[in-house]
Structure formats: C-alpha cells, structure tokens
Amino acid sequence: MSAPTASLASILGDDELSIIDIGARGSLAGQLMPIAASVNVIGFEPDEAECTRLNAALAQQSPWRSARVLPVAVGRTAKDRDFFIAREAVLSSLLRPNPDYSESFRDQVVEVVKLDTVSLDDLYKQGVLSETIDFIKVDTQGSELEILQSGETHILPAVLAIEVEAEFAEMYAQQPRFSEIEQYLRQQGFEFLTLQPRYSYAAMHDIEATKRRMTFCDAVFMRGRAWLAALTPEERARNLTRLATLHASYGLIGEAIELVRNYDKPLEQKLRDYAQQVAQPRFRWRGRLLISALRCALNPSRRNRLLLARSALMYGNRSGERWQLQDIHKST
Image (tube, rainbow, N blue to C red; front, side, top):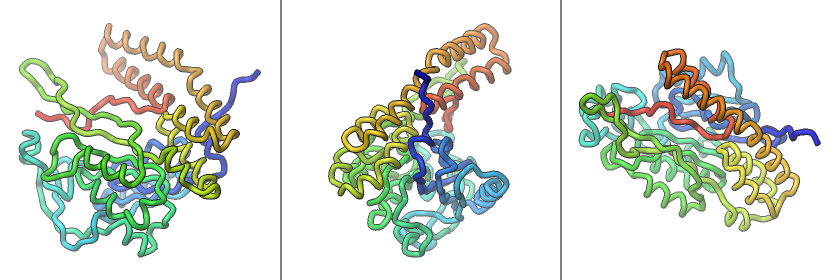
C-alpha cells in the first residue's frame, strides 16, 4: 500500500475560511499559512504606517485567497481614547504599560495620542465584516477581552476558533488576564485547548539571561463536541470541515478525529491520513535536530546556531507546533 498523501488543504477541500487578525503588526495569521490559498483575511492595525506597509507587501505578493489590512482600532465603540505609543512599537496599547511590572516598562511610553475605537458588531453593521467569521486572532497588548466582547451579538456566535494573547501578569494597568478571558469565552461556548507559553527573562550578575515566570501566552479556544451536538444536521455539515481543519492547523489532529468521528467518516479518514503523514518523518526530523544541537554545543558559531534554529523551525512547522526560539519581551 502506498503512503497516504494528505495535507491541511486536502482536509479543507473546496471549503474556505474567513478570518480576522486584530493587531496585525508584523504579519497576518501565520498559523494558517499552509492553507492560505483558501483563506480570506481582514487585518486591523491602528498604526497607519504599519498598515500601509502590510498592504504594500500583500499587493506585491500574497499567499492568501484575499487579504487586506484596515487602519482601524478595534474595541468598544468610543471617541478620543488614549493610545499609548511605546518605544517598542509592539508594546503600544490602549492601556498604559504598568511600571511596576518591569524596569523596562517605566520609560516605555513615548507619546499618548487620541484615537477612535470601533466594535466588531459595529464593523458588521457598517458592512466591513460579515456574520460568517470562522477564526479570530487578537493580539492587542491588554485589550483583547474588550475586543471579543465587542462582537458578542453579531460576530462571536458564528466563530469557530480564537487565538488570543493573554497575560498572567499585569503588564498593563488594570488589564484582564488569562482567567478572565477563559471564563468569558467558556460562557460563549468555547473550549480552551492549548497555549504557546511566553516567559520573561532577566540578567543576573554574570549570567546573561535567566528564565522568570510565564508572563503571557497565545491561547487557543475552539468549539467542541457539545457545541456540535447542539447544531442542526445542516448547521453541523456547514461547520464541521472548517472546524476540523482549524484543529489540525494547531496540531490537534486527535481532537479533530474525535470531533468528527460520529458525523463524517470520509473526513475522519482524511484526518487519519494526515496524522500518519505528519508522524512519518518524526524520527528523521528529531535526528536532524539532535545533530544540529550537538554541532552547536561543540562549536557555537553563528552558522551553527542558525542551522539549529532552522532545524527547530522546520520540525516545529511540520508537527503543527511553534517553537519558542526567542521571547518577545525580555525584562531587565
């Protein structure tokens, strides 16, 4: 018997995904890049210069079925809100950085500007968004819960999965933390499935960097079996393939198989084929990763460190997980 040929694209088939990426600085929803040709994405980024850069890059070369980034700050609809521009642009927020969190946060704010925020529900009423958003990614430095709540009426009920940055420490003044986000999403019918942890580091004496607490994470919430069981057969058929594909995109293939087992045998087989395809190179990739690590330990040159990073990224992408090669924030 020949080896199965399966991919995320083969699981999704002729279906498409509609997603929004709120806080799109840097790049759009990378976790769905393997199926980008079947994904329609709208990004939101309040920094107009960054928004222009992203749209120019998309115009030059875009893997997405369709993609655009809008210079809109999402949140509860309000006028003239303070927006704190940080020295490190990725730390800019509607909330003031908490100086008690870290020494580096004490002089982080370089400017406070006024901007308007628009809710997800109002963006729907304006025709910017439809009611059929499958996936939301939100990373806005502390205002994530407000944003999710702003789409509770028209957007959130149809959403299948959410990736949200959530803090465990109070990095921003009076920000909601992971437990509050999890509780809210659980009330909305989502299940917490996995997270990518992020740690802060500190220099100590003659040690360059030492690991401290987990300060934030990228948490993933999705619809589960109870939600599926409550749907009509027509609604279930309309959502099942896209929901299973989103599970598989995060490496949760076993969970996806359990999800579809009682409803769609051909889809279950596609997932099993994909699981086998992913598992086949596991030992080969681990061997290459080990060789790169040993080479780097014996000779930690820049070239060997780059080879190790490349091996880690290749294995991480293939297994559906993301390797934490460098933390975004390092405290001093």
